[in-house]
Image 1 (spheres, rainbow, N blue to C red):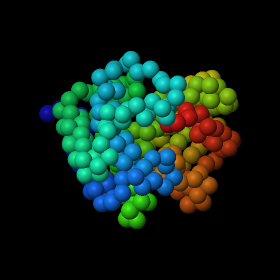
Image 2: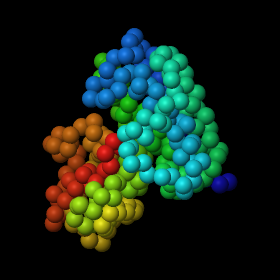
Image 3: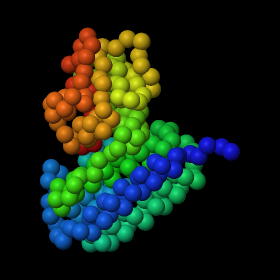
Length: 264
């Protein structure tokens, strides 16, 4: 029997976190409440999450024909423009139903999947969905006062690995060109290593440890995701002991973050 396109535990984890987000969203009495540290209200956050299943499917249907937007933030707003309701109950229903349909397609649909013009796996889309539900669940918890959700170790490895392999999609070529060329080793503790090779306007990420690196980063995958998604500062992440850099030029790792396109 052929292996499934995506492990059931990953789909179950993503579905659980989506359900938790929807339940938390329903508990908000005023959808016009501003979400701390975001430029969105609760309603706008709910619209964003509700639009994600369509967004992921649309990227897949576009195949290799994805065109990088000039303004990522403005483009992101257009990706939820079809979700107009501000009612938290309606948004929660759209979220659960939309992701249920997406997860069913990931389990039985096309493999590979297209993601921002690049071929990837159904597991990548499931991991990205899980990450969106958890990170935005943390955003919502800042409004409701509930305990923020967190990725467990297994989930964090899946999400961090998928994120690493798709980093190049979100790199601004001009910003990359302004940074020195180099080869960097990122190791997720208890998991895989990745090589980040920066040359001119390009950043290429591949699985495996480079023969030689300008700098190394050892990271707990859950802390890596919080830092890379801007939910925790780099200094705080370093002070936690869960992320540290070393090697000949460890300061060069800060340049990787500076290459990300504005508005991502």
